[in-house]
Every structure is written in structure tokens, then in C-alpha cells.
Length: 62
Image 1 (cartoon, one colour):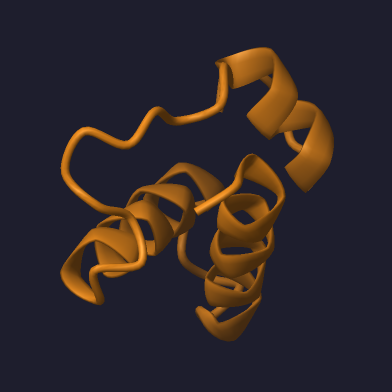
Image 2 (spheres, helix red, strand yellow):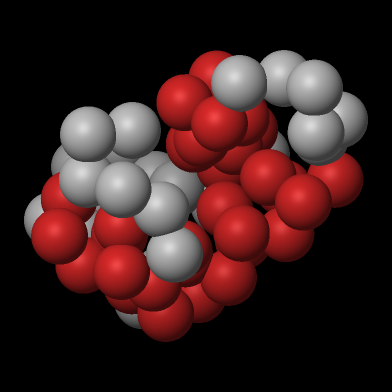
């Protein structure tokens, strides 16, 4: 899976989660969902926090 596909998948998953859930939890849940669905395979390299934060329009400290 490319970085672009992963970011799109995580972004869609985060949008589908209730907005009253803290952003850091939505991000964590979205990454976990990608792992569970096998969209994010073992050994896959995640994008760096700077790239991920910029692509998702969130703060790096999130």
C-alpha cells in the first residue's frame, strides 16, 4: 500500500468516527482498523509524523 492510499484510508476512517471522540483516539483507531482489515500489512512502513500530520491537517503533537 502506498503512503497516499494509507493516508486516504486513515482519513476516511477518522471522518467516519464520531467527532466527540478525541482526535488522537480517532487516529489510533483508524490505524488499528487498517491493520485489522489487512490494508496495512506486517512490515509496512508508516509515513513520518510530519507527512501524516500535514496530509491529515492535524498537529504533529496529536
